[in-house]
Image (cartoon, rainbow, N blue to C red):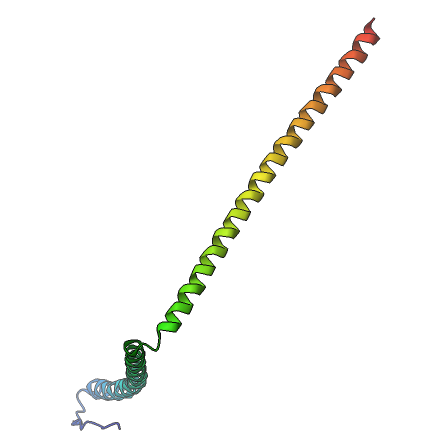
Length: 136
């Protein structure tokens, strides 16, 4: 609810600019009040949502704590431990497979480079032999 503040208006023929300034300040104050109430309403909604979320989180944490205290979550913990162990094993296996593939590719590249160097040596020898035969 916006409340207008009473502003005394003096009609002063000597200073008409003062009256205009006073009116503009009054309209500015009214605009600021409107924006302020809009911002407050928006912040209230955000705060309301935050408090509801915090209450729900505390309630959920309390329920989980009570279930864990009574021992009803022990099987869940065992299942989670089993699943995490399997996930770790799969990750390690994947890393090992990647390392093996990299080693294989490295050996394959070295073998191909040796073959290419041997082929280049053979070609060089043949060219030199042909040049020597052509000279003689």
